[in-house]
Length: 171
Image (cartoon, rainbow, N blue to C red; front, side, top):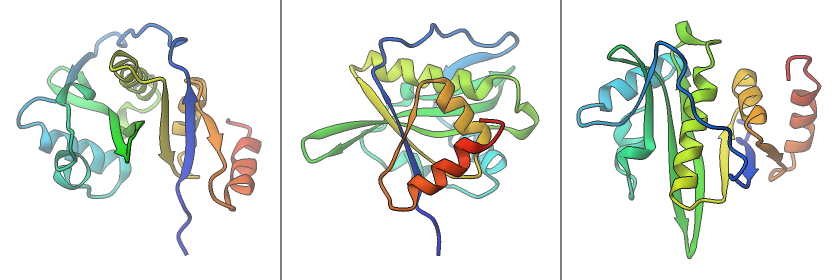
């Protein structure tokens, strides 16, 4: 049996710290022909194949300025998307597909690219943001909590799972 995704939410975006790209890196948005760069980055950071068209490109609306990369030179080394989804009449914002190449972990890039995506949500008028994650993604959960995300208890398994995660010395 597979576990449901953990859900986190950040209420209010008025308190976001200013964005500063880490020294030696540049922030840019998705450009034509970046599909392969995104797929490569996700493959190495998530250790699984994800097709751009399936996860991002075929979804409407797709705003290229909300799919962000932090680059070292010309190479994207971190990514995140400010994602919107309309459910009926309601618009929900998501921090979506945050990934960092393993050799660049621990350099603040996951935090930086996530913060940049949150700024995009705020610029577009968003007031809160959701995200989905997995129990084993403790470094990512640390980043999300530092950014002000809080656990949501949607599934009956969530309270026990969050209790275990929050008990970890590293969180």
